[in-house]
Amino acid sequence: MPGIELATALSERWLSNSRIDPESLYGPLILWAIQGWHKPDQALHLALDTTMLWNRICVVVVSVVCHGRAIPLLWQALEHPSASVSAAVSIALLEKADRWLAGFGAITLLADRAFPCAELLGWLENKPGWTYVMRLPGDTEIHGTAAPLGCQVRRLRLRRGQCRGFRNIRLWADGSHSANLVLAHPTGLAVEEPWYLISNAKPSLDLVWSYGRRFCCEQLFRDQKSGVFQLEDSGLRNPQRLDRLLVVIAIAVLAGSLQGYALSLAGLRREVDPHWKRGMSFLRLGLRTLQMLASDTTARLMAWLPIPLQELEPCIPSRRSRRTQAQAWFSRIELPRQPRSTHRQTLQLAVA
Image 1 (tube, helix red, strand yellow):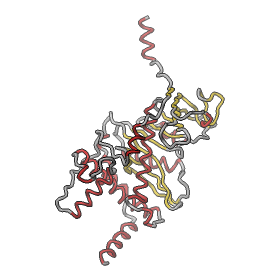
Image 2 (cartoon, one colour):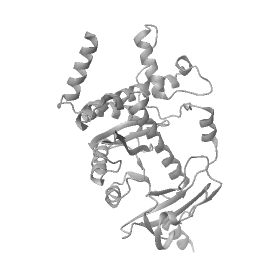
Image 3 (cartoon, one colour):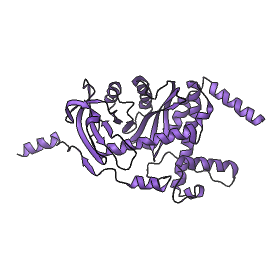
Image 4 (tube, helix red, strand yellow):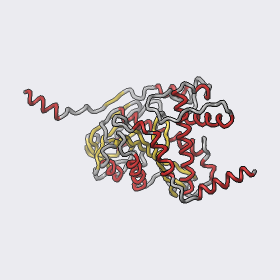
């Protein structure tokens, strides 16, 4: 009992300490871990998403997407009864991310339909190193080649297994912002409504693959709230205290994932996870390794290395998931042709 009382007292002291700055503690760790993307030819994918706690607290999270999972980069807990937050909150987090990632290569932002708005697109238009892929709500008003007279984007019918692309679509009733549009209705996924994706990159299948990577945020939230860390059992209702608890969880997610990556690179995954037909996530692999170290003096701690850029053997939880991942998403694809460059046309005129 004394040990439990001491742990409780230390936890309470941590949660109530207003001097603890989660960003100062966690920032150097995550920036060290993602240093491999500090190259011009490497694109770093960030996901912007929210999760709700007790229908009272909204946590806005910017996470790094890699190897099929999301690792927290920045977050903010708010006393807010909805998963939709104002553009000011999203932009404030992205401003911090932009400062942290100054000097990195290309950055691709992935976001769901709760986030696209004129304010956010205006902010992204002033960030030349940023590309975005965001899903529009079905009731978004669009104008352009896809809808010359203007209509809600859901009026553009798309059968399952089809993908279509359009250039320079004007958004919202006033048409104040333009973006490229890709409509995608993948086969084999539990997607009732097509994806209406906007981006400042050329309309291509790459936008669909990039957006599909965003769903790893759901596994991160599940691990945080009920799967691994049982955040929902904490009963915390104060956003500042939650932020301090989330920094502990973020460090654990990062440390566990790094150990899992190192195990996979060394070919030692089966020493921790004996299953051949399915596999633990890299996070669970790493956490199990750290647990083994606490009880077995012969267990080996893998060297701490930054997140690897090379492809790793995927952690697939079931044969059904493997079949789903191997299934083709589209049977019909209609994308606009690449426009001929002005430079090439000038050369042709000069030769003529």
